[in-house]
Length: 274
Image 1 (tube, rainbow, N blue to C red):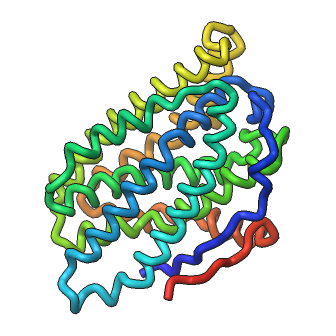
Image 2: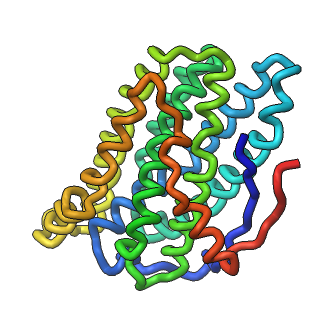
Image 3: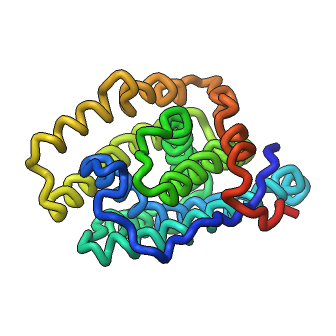
């Protein structure tokens, strides 16, 4: 069981943000903007999946998960609220969120299914966010320093994603979810996640009028496939999910707890799950 603390981020998200807030880099800004556009809808799906999965457990087994589920829901609800505020700035800049409505339509297809399917999808997505979180915490300087508020926002989010990466996975296992369905959903989510991320990033760049700039493509190549590239450094931990004996805790690095300890002045503790 994981002890999950609910925190309130102490940054001002009311103040405007620069169009290329990520170190002046158009591609990196467009990519992170795309990810943020998916979060409010995605986080709500994860909350609902974990809550319903918990309720599906026999009552005598719920005690083991009660505090962790409450902490997970509290953290994800906070992420949803913070990114909704951030996304408001993107909308005012003229960017259009095509990802969220598409995701909502897909979610309607899940209505009435066994809650293990929702947990399998959530566990797969949580693996993606966890390995990206570890990569971001390891390469925080690549977020740029032109707006320290947003650097803090993304690293705080990363730290908490790494912190609660096992919750949906453990509930799936506790409900008897099979390895075969876990892998089936992981492969499907891999395709959906990558296509949706690319699609929204390209849309952001097109509206930003930077899609066909050489500097954009150079940045994309370096950021994704360079020596410290996102794809290059996350492929191995992504692949480990396919192992029958995999558990998210096997990828624990300590970077999350270290960032939270070193940056305790950037947030206040709302409460631990009780």
